[in-house]
Image 1 (tube, one colour):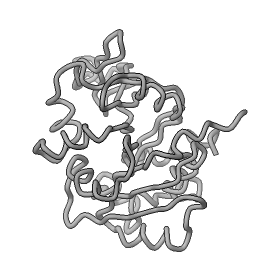
Image 2 (image 1 turned 30 degrees about the vertical axis):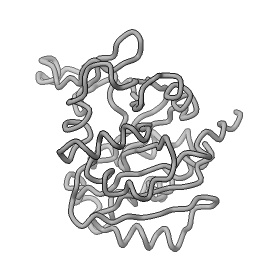
Image 3 (image 1 turned 30 degrees about the horizontal axis):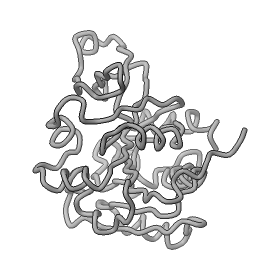
Length: 247
């Protein structure tokens, strides 16, 4: 298989990892979620390897709970060819608040922003190309999944724009799987979108920013490949099997 194109060589990557990890704290103890072991390898290292394969050179980590553990890990295991900057939140700020907090460290336009507790094996090169051709200042990478119950789902128009963010439907509340397309927690934002986020109140990118925008504002790019969110003990336990084909 050919190596991916180095599409992130001139794009900063922000990883948002300031959450408290309450759903998985009993499993991880004093280990931050970003360092959760997946087949013996810290999850952060797997994310970095994936980003390296797309040519990433500069990484900004928004940290909070147990940030010192992550900083110590990076100091002891500096990623090859990547400058890694950490910014520690003074208190939990939410995803939008965290992005505002780390913005002074962002040097590129656009910037790739991703949640630190999920992995999506999509082609980031195709995502970058679609964003640049999409005519919007913000793009969301979307993942098709067999059951959207934990995530809610997206209503996407034929021309690839987000029409609405939908919550659980009746079939989900009755325990029936409902396939659909979800927000994979990976974004490309131009500087104008970062300006807009700075001006909007509220801590959550999803609720306080995306859901307040006019329908059609956001470019939606649906990728292929495995998706997993390690935020629960069950999903962390199956992460090794899901991610094995990619490492």
